[in-house]
Image 1: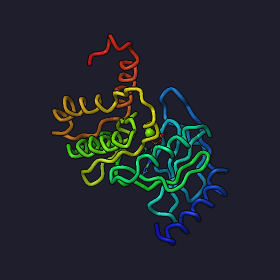
Image 2 (image 1 turned 90 degrees about the horizontal axis):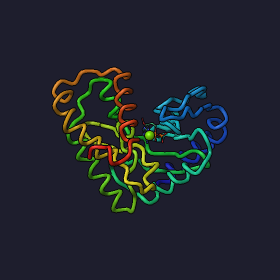
Image 3 (image 1 turned 90 degrees about the vertical axis):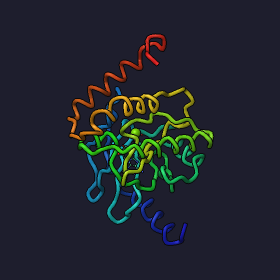
Length: 224
Ligand SMILES: Nc1ncnc2c1ncn2[C@@H]1O[C@H](COP(=O)(O)OP(=O)(O)O)[C@@H](O)[C@H]1O
Ligand SMILES: [Mg+2]
């Protein structure tokens, strides 16, 4: 990385430590729900939120986002370790720097697949091809694709990106990606792909909760 880029990163690092961490207020809701954001310091902009962390950016540091975990635990250092193991690949972000509960990541442009459905944007087949190849790359690097769902994948100019790899160190046969692919092939391609209309968030929320309940059943009762 160039000297200029290093200087920019260290300036952002200071701003995170001196301003962001003390002023950003986030609360974990639990039960598979996104975190509750109570306060974002002025000038910082919200990029996205997950169940454990919030992602923000600062206008003076384009191209870099800061993922801040609501609580300091091992998750953050595990995610930094996953990025080290992953190396560089165009379908993934990169971790430039990490602290006790935050990571400075390369910003991925685009829209999450979840938001594509809400906004009525057609999710191209190439997105699934790209993600499949990216996950295969991750497996070759000794990682285990985990939690690969619509909020952790993005589409940008018709190509697919994996935005959240935080649980890729957990080897427990997560079936989300194969289930998502099945849903895309068996349902989406026959319906919304042909006629991409916006789907209300509450409908997707019902689908998400139904899926969670379905996957909580014992293996013997779950259709393969
Ligand atoms: N590198 C990134 N570039 C752009 N947006 C991102 C990036 N990382 C995360 N996001 C956005 O922030 C959201 C939450 O981040 P995520 O890593 O999924 O958090 P969690 O681990 O809590 O699920 C994502 O769904 C995505 O919209
Ligand atoms: Mg996520």
